[in-house]
Image (tube, rainbow, N blue to C red; front, side, top):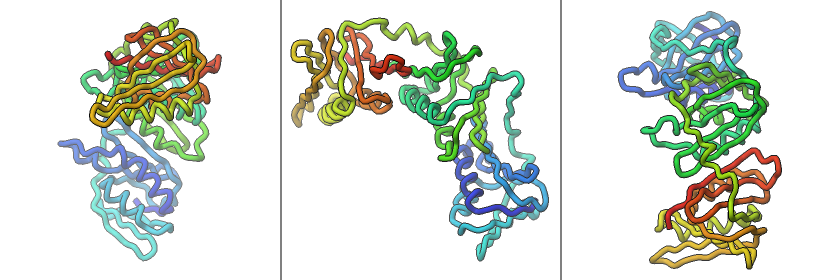
Length: 366
């Protein structure tokens, strides 16, 4: 294999795929990145057997071929080179690199030992093309409530599914739940995508990206953004019927300014560190206020109050971090929240009539 390539494009591709390269015991080849010519392009790929990521970059191909090379070494080496053309040549399974006054030889491993990259049959798969901004927002709004508990794998991903002609994303860790409506769909979809995969896709999206092409088959999902592809296994199992956990109506509701709510939640959280983050929220229908109270037994206590449009009254105790994270992903200047008594779920959402996002937090037993 012999080719020339720009340092910037090569460094960017190596950095993107290198994150997926794995150090799984017994499979040292997964520490490597695959380099393989493809027409007048260079394929740069890595896999950890759960996720495979590829990047195609334009190159001047002198001689086609393939090789694998240690991911960390080549990524750090290429990123340190000046912005110039890199001459790359494979001699006896070693990569000879030259860029300006810099030359290096890196020991490679033959590409035959590298796992075969997964593929998806486009003809028999379900496909979507999603606007990048909508994709980023929907994933960010749901990924925060996915579980990190590997003993319940179906909760460690985001559930993409069709319901009444719409594509929804949902995630829960048992303490909170989020649901985002994304696009209309005529297909039946039911797939749990690992959070690690979605995080990788978010990192891969560049400023120039406009759309994300998504392809589902029975066991895998593929994301394509510009010249990058990420293929991942889906989480095996059935996601719980979460809709039954969302109350149809509530006894108490309040509408508040988001920035004020964020501020009082942050302040209450400072005093809630000793008590597992618990803050008590009181809705007062007479004063038309919402107050947050928290206690730090050795340092003091805090009560912060803000005006609100109130219906009904009551009190609920919530985790301040969960509350802060929910507020950070609701896209509106005004927030509505509602609950029915101390032990019922608390729902947060935008006040927009066509709101496409719901965030549910289970209360703490005060």
